[in-house]
Image (cartoon, rainbow, N blue to C red):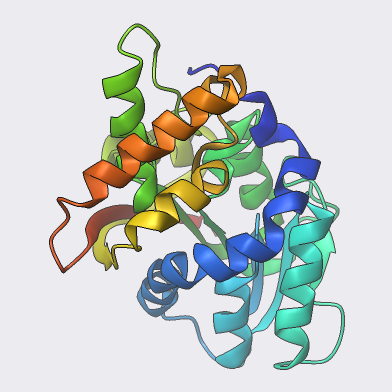
Length: 269
């Protein structure tokens, strides 16, 4: 178990970043959501839950493909962005404020439940896995995506490296409350809540390298959840952002290659 950064568990932190997250990060995580949706191969009209929907990337894909989908998130700001995004696709309240560790749905409500880079950040991620299992119908599909790199993906990788270089005496924090970044760890979590693992798919995508100035302007967006960030004064925060920007100068045109593990499991009939 890793020490959980306090900001990760604060809805206000995510509220403050909701629109920027949608603009800066969601368009990239959406690539993995598209892959997960295709891998799930659900029938038309499937009842789908998106746990920790964030800005609604997976939720939007599901609705566009004709699923009867709903998303939940503990951040009202994220839910607002997700609802605005999905309103153009399907009428009705498609995003709700809710704790993924205590879902307000009856048992066996959904044909499939997704959590794209969400459940591993819960204070009690196994409670999140258990709630996904509870609300699935018999034979229902659970789809959980995690980052293979414990530090995250895309620009987060460069910020992690900058922290290691500048502060070698400090442990570099991870957003994960518990590591699930291997097939065996994901399968273990599924089995712990009574789900039968089906497959873990490795999906690699390239994040286009942002302009160097992006790293100076968005250090808080990428690393503000970290207790290390909170301990730095303004001068050291600026030096940290400059170090990440310097690392970005060495990126190749293809960008930052990042791998997600998309685990799938079924509820016994």
